[in-house]
Image (cartoon, rainbow, N blue to C red; front, side):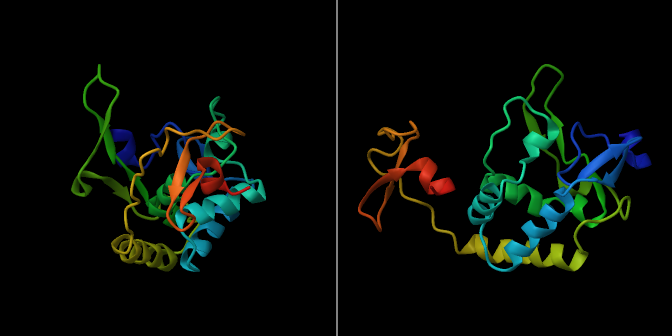
Length: 188
């Protein structure tokens, strides 16, 4: 907590598009800051999380896990990753830490902390996205969240598997049948 209150970045991996030098965040020297800007632009222009993830995968952009050097890094972007990037206040230059905590020393499960207890330092580092764009994305996320209908689980969803890749098949009502889950998420 003391380091976070002093303005030092205390996380294990910096946010996508940043690098850590002497416990401070700086824009990365790669194309990742431009990718973050593109994610925000695409969302403002009406694309959804999965659509943006498919676009980035098709462009061949490295995923955050690949940039972080994780052994289990996948080649595809996921909608959940896009959502986390769009919600991350680090991209407007604010250092927000203490958003999660571990339950205890022995349990690895993480818990969310109430917003009042966050450690926030405004303008701690160079922003990648403007405050106006970030605020617009948050408003759009709230509006779009209300319009989402939950998919109905069908009888054989994730019980029947694709013969080509082994991914679970998903039922699609508009096709009146099942399609490969990998195809549904990532396209051809």
